[in-house]
Figure 1 (cartoon, rainbow, N blue to C red):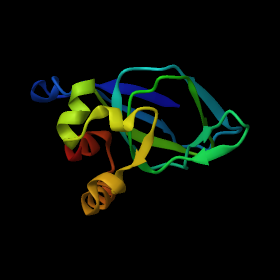
Figure 2 (cartoon, rainbow, N blue to C red; figure 1 turned 90 degrees about the vertical axis):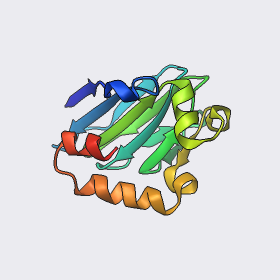
Figure 3 (cartoon, rainbow, N blue to C red; figure 1 turned 30 degrees about the horizontal axis):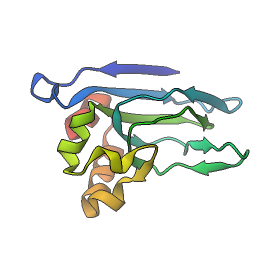
Length: 143
């Protein structure tokens, strides 16, 4: 399993903290649960592996959109990953996500919002471009 972070260009550093890549090309033998604490950062995530699920307090799970915007989280959450893992994300400073989307960050608090609800046709175009990319470098160039 590979997980690594990449720094943005100097011009984007006021808005973007980093990009990250998380990959596991061979299917996981058993599901992996990742617990994540609250944080004050926003994000945009593009999944090109098997879909991740959010585990809820009542024991059920909810499929996470393949491309989404995540706001600041005020409580812990747990993700369940199975199959192959392939995702690239953009971690925004709090003001960065608001600046890029021209929307208040508070609208995304504790949520993962399908990118198509926000960017409409542009989201599908961006997702298709990322799926066609064969390397992390080209994905970051697209982003």
